[in-house]
Image (tube, rainbow over all chains, first blue to last red; front, side, top):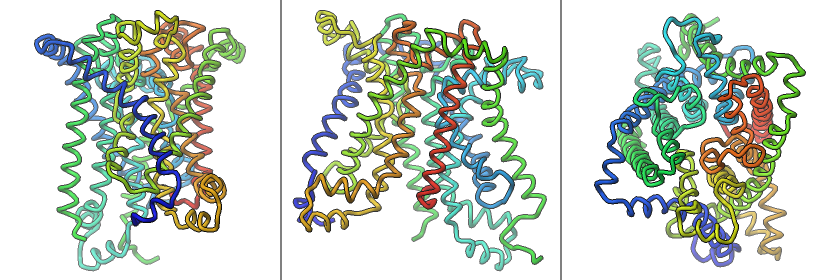
Length: 273
Length: 275
């Protein structure tokens, strides 16, 4: 777009003004409260709040279950995307549409449904000799549910636009199918997989609604970080809640930076165009 | 039949299809079926009674009220923001795009928390509001604000790529022929973006209806007053009124299914340009 035309094209001032006003009132000012509020705490107070054993345990739990769920979603998400794009089967359109269910279904609804399925006497839970609901496994299941569409929907379009000529060339040159997948297809999918993973992971880290029902919420065992913030708020410990919220915000930010870094490295290594 | 060199052996295809379908059945289809089975566990009478009792009705009304305020506001914002980002080049554009995505990467609990910090009784603004008899936190305005925050990227996110793809030559043609900016928007831009807009509005509504964490923080859970549908489900569930909880949940699931159907219809009409 060239600069001279900008003056002719209408609505710049209005849309800039409205957008900035809206974002400032709704996002920037409220969000800045977290930093102002934390600044009112002393460093030792802050450190004590965020390094309490119960809180540290919740970081580990939230982090561990989110990574596990996002990884499982990568494996099955790629398989699902592959099957949806490459193989014909009856009811495919229906299944394809259903993949977005976790985006459309309220998290609380998903939470109570998964809990009833995976409880000891539930349809699925009764087939297992160990407990699933009210353990970290249950939390992971809820996080798999909410993160599933991210990987599928990132990988699917890449597979759809993939040129089969590349696969043919690879096969003609003597590669077997697995080699073709590993060396030709997978590198093309990798950026989409990483993006899908990071979206699913970021979503899982902050998830609340679907998790609290299936988690059981036992301190030191199945208490996720967002729940600790909630508990502190209910006790009117605003400073404590805010300090932990700040830790979560910084964690998400650092993770996004790391993932962007990996993405950049992958693009550099595999994409030669 | 000739052997396909770009496909897998039959047994691999069957196994992969089976794995994919089994996984989706376990994680998507069974939970969906379970909601309806449990909702009708004790028959149709109990189901109808659960969704027509006064607390349930007031929860449904509140949810509809919140949606009817937040969705139009965020749609308006989405159109302005997308117009700005797709049609103009300016400094800080990428920063703005990142800011629009913030609610996607923030825990809903934190989304609720920031409004408690801003308007709660412990803040000076909150004190001022109390002195002037205005209630935001633990009242409907707080619920609206938290929902606005959580759902505000949806319309903008859908419109930006659509508008960017459209470019601005059509609008320029209309403007050079003498049409006003507003007329150009309604007669040239809007017809081009209508499906993307509709899709964004639907996603925004689905999330506004279903928001739980953020709303839970600011609502105060006052029955009949500040309980949305999702909060009502939580209360029923925690009181072991499972059938009633699933009955209300089934209403929301029907909405979710309708959302998915509309989404697929839009994608179909769009010529499958969006995956």
